[in-house]
Length: 321
Image (tube, rainbow, N blue to C red; front, side):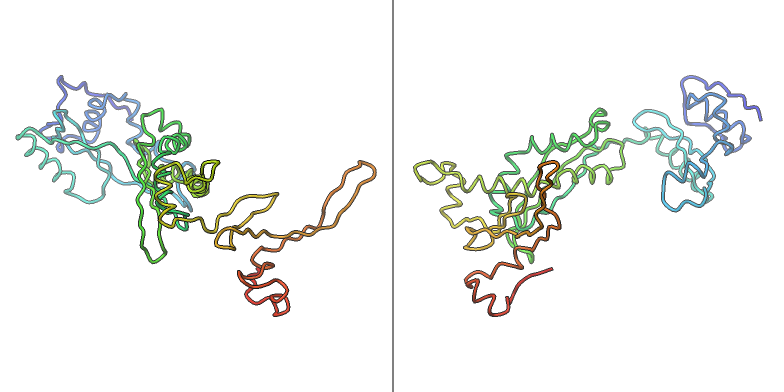
């Protein structure tokens, strides 16, 4: 079918009396003209060049086909002084007509006025079991620039379009059923991207945040002058003088994890490993094979219990997987 696009009279106006009385081809022609679209685009609206099942299969899960709806345009709309035809894909009658009628009434009073804030969403990270939550909160605020730079590496397209991280907040909840927790809010401008997906991807980049905070808190609390004086940092000194301490710190040590689990956080336990030693004479290299590891909580006695007494007593309380 050949469609001739009717030139739109200047200035363009969405106020089209009798639009619903026009033949379908004429309505389509006028809509294309107002949108500045070529006549060849008419095939899109005929349904012959719409979404194919093969394309839909890459968009969502478990695709079995496509589903079509009538596409109409609501007329008479004027928003912020600019005329628009509003596309509406809907199966219910009278809705397009009702919207067009209300737009005509609003038009007589100057049309609609609209504004929108920047598309900034908040992604939340919940941190539990953080040593010295107050110090951790301060560490987050002191490293906002580092955090936002890390997040902005996630999506260079959003960055190029003017979006990205807009700031970081840290809120301390000192008393909850799960104990003290630190809530970190990432403010992220998603632009026209699907907001939830974009901000979730950005927040996932902060997964190492807890480990980094633990390191910062340890430095924050333990940094002292060589002469054994109290911490020079006034905030650290305040918390130390009020009973702040490090508990259950963990760090990598010689290929395994050291857990400061005993002696009120001053004694580490590690998992032992055993294997078979092999030496290759032809290459002159040695290897350890058939390595077996035992969790630290499985082979270390509880605090205050001697090892020999614990073994003789049947290793009660051992946490072996």
